[in-house]
Length: 278
Ligand SMILES: [Ca+2]
Ligand SMILES: [Ca+2]
Image (cartoon, rainbow, N blue to C red):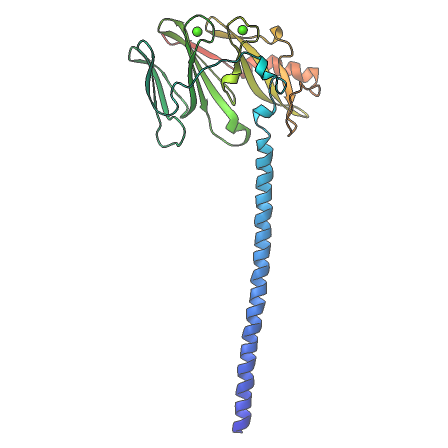
């Protein structure tokens, strides 16, 4: 009896341990498989994320320039240095001061004020200012302010910029012009006809019926105002087909009808707000 009981106990002990070992391996492989699935999902999500990130990378405007690649060295772009790289206060001319304060946002200027005789004539409306320049745009011997700001956002919206130009119309007198565009920088100002006045390259993105395009138009500066002048410059407006690979060709894909429709609304889409400060 005693012998049988011991044998049963021994078997029971063995079975329990066998079952535990079996459960252990079963669980191990079960969780391992789950981890495999989770890892696969993670990898899939990561790949999808990278795919869209990759696509966005190709949306950069420099991959779809208004002029053929490597031809820009022959053009006369506006040359100017940033007045303030980060934060500080400088006097750019007699009693014309620029002050910038960076608060919280790393790498961006938070608040910019421009004052004439201590009277503030400009405050930025967007908090991410990424460039303040002072240069004579219209060749009237008075320097003008150019301020670039970003709206932030995702996808293509992340590239939308706000441009503020303060035209100095007389000594210490300015008028203010503002407009939205994409990835604004100094390369938007180029003297195409060599008259000493800089033309403005206006960048837009057009969602067409079949394809999408980066669109470039030329505006001329006339007496502290700007005027659409595509007719005066060859090949403008330019519609550069957004093909997910670098492209500098004026597209033939867009129909004449689509182009006309876009151009008829151009001045409606883009309201250049000009108002005299004084
Ligand atoms: Ca000027
Ligand atoms: Ca010019």
